[in-house]
Length: 227
Image (cartoon, rainbow, N blue to C red; front, side, top):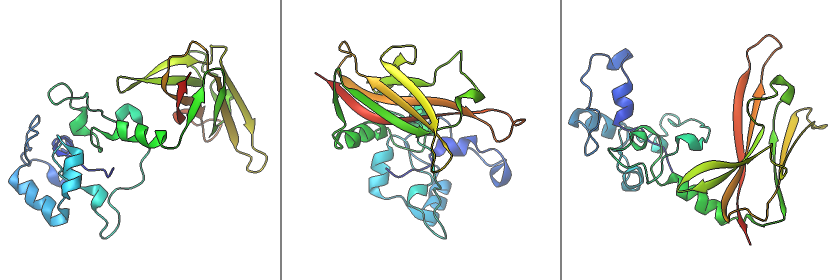
């Protein structure tokens, strides 16, 4: 799915060249101001496929389809906490209007992962390995290094963490690169509810000893625990 900016992004841009210009109108989802539509079409008119995928958000800038004089959509970090689903309906939440992707991205990601046959049985082990910094930067005594999340009604909820005996977290230095490797290993419990799961890692890092600590997350291995 290609990304695109909607009019909610324009409404929040209140500095620079756009300062003082009339806003499109927060809450309107049916159409774009004719002036900005002409500007958009001059730069790149969105394809029908793009407009269909982004509904109900009207496309103001189809950055995922703009490549002149260089790609307008740079590298991005996937973050499911900001990925809308079809349950985020218009009027109930502005998330669908503010994010770069359409409302069906979450289900699309799940379907694609299922085609990879990442299926695991109860009582078996599954694991995921991440490039990660030394856990001693922050022992996360009030948090956790590893979490197992289950997809429930298009939302990821935490069901196991490293306090559970079924979940193991290990860290070591990779001899070939001298970078850290964090491994999450999960023994799927016999009482686990069948469904879609993913392994999520939390960590902390810093550039130097005196620099502030930065926190990060990563997730891997969308799978299905079945009987």
